[in-house]
Amino acid sequence: MRYQIRLPNDLRKAMSIARDNISDGTLVEITDPGEHSASFAEMAASQSWDDIVAWKFKCQHCGEEFSLHAETYHGSGGYWEPVRKGAVQKNL
Image (cartoon, helix red, strand yellow):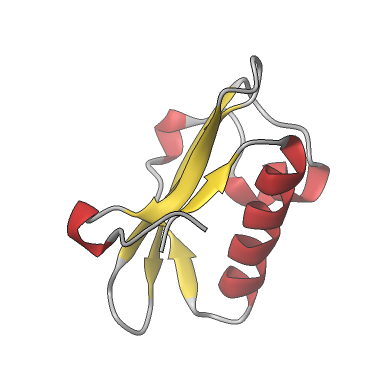
């Protein structure tokens, strides 16, 4: 499934879900550390974001990779979605 991020609250919700899934061991962050000045955990805890955010995660159970990305400065939004485009079914 694909979750569209339109508003700051949508991004907060997606980040909360990712954080909870990291905490319970379902997901692990696989973002290249050089891509951001702060880790996902730091940004999720502070709710202070860069103008563009983009993280990748991997499911520890099925191996599927997910992307959480959004443009926050102008509010054009983004998505929480599978990296493998064939797995994208529809927007929530």
